[in-house]
Image (cartoon, rainbow, N blue to C red; front, side, top):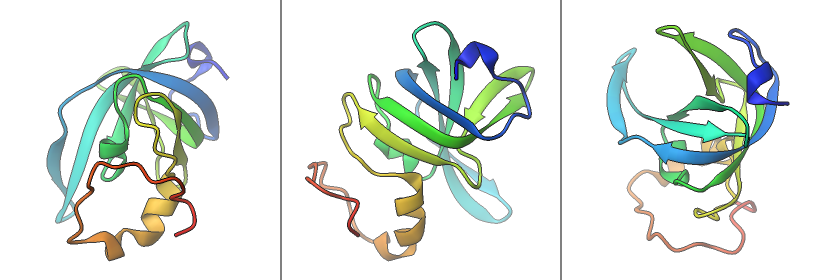
Length: 130
């Protein structure tokens, strides 16, 4: 799948992309909950699109990261197409500068148990067994 083929409202987007840049994260209040988000510009080598990162995904993505999105969604905000994992999608870091192999799905299942812990910044060999 290529970025140039994506249409607003399209679901089931499976794509591998490289991060060109990441904006500063910000916190918003949505339905009474504090949510962290950041936008990143990503490319498939031919075209670019904005990727919206939510909560823990914000910290996993760095410039140069290679990301695999499974079951993503294309929405449109202020006339611009944006890629997101949405509620049912998954994001994996496939390589690049971050090197962490964690998926959104793994984080969602352990999100409540991580409260109060700080990331030391060190990479672990295997984070998928949690």
